[in-house]
Image (cartoon, rainbow, N blue to C red; front, top):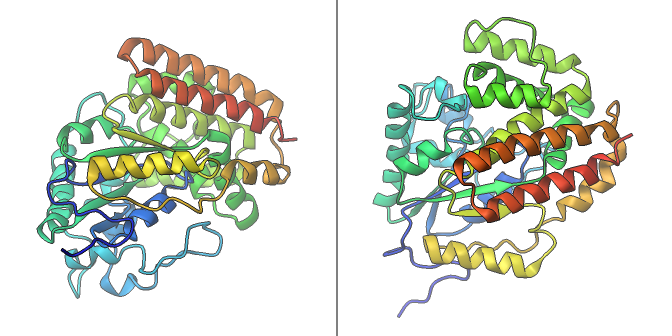
Length: 359
């Protein structure tokens, strides 16, 4: 009998036909994805809804590697290597991908754009399954669509990757401050602005006191450009309010179909928790990723807090309190599982502690 390599389990007959990683920007979700990608029984797709896929060419794949400033792990293969079968030699764009997939949506039910998204993701999963691999899809644009995807892919394991909002925000804000990269500051404004007519989104905006860019909504591309301009000059406290509003919205959507939550604040602190995660993946999806060696991201946040300039950390407690109230109202209305509610409460308590270090 042939033995399986360490960390891997034969997926034949496993209960889950794929793993969907639902992460946020700067949540360390890429590291989680990289640990799953390291397994022989996996085909791991990076950011299937990324806007970059609309213009991707075969010649681009080897060029797109982790940048020095990204904080991403070293990769044995380029980010988008798994998309090669879905690219034509003399054409741009991944087969089945449409640019409008890149904007998250928070409608309570799937909209008219969802059927082609569903078909596209089925294509990716089918390719992996036909090769007797477990498809792993890592997203940072599906928090709003999580309930839709959980219903559309009930045989997949849906994993939520959660990190406290202060650490996530600091990671993106420092890229903006130190390297003039406003993408992660602009992203919450873009998603909130485009979805602001959705009642839940409007409630989150109002609760957290978010100030959206003054430009009116026109096309998605024009509004995205307006958000990039806005992010270059926005005051740090206002940027954080927008981030927390989106974080809170994402937290509420975790009630709709998550099978497992990966706590990134805990994974670098507790060996027993790492072992528990590995067992959960093995039992639910037939693969056992090695999550040992994770960095202690909470300690890193504390050490780098002095680099955050222009934000009064003491005033951020009111933002966290507003997020708690917003999430609590949702929890009461939608019967949020007790373990998810406790996890979210812990993240906001940690956010109070960490933001107090900002001066």
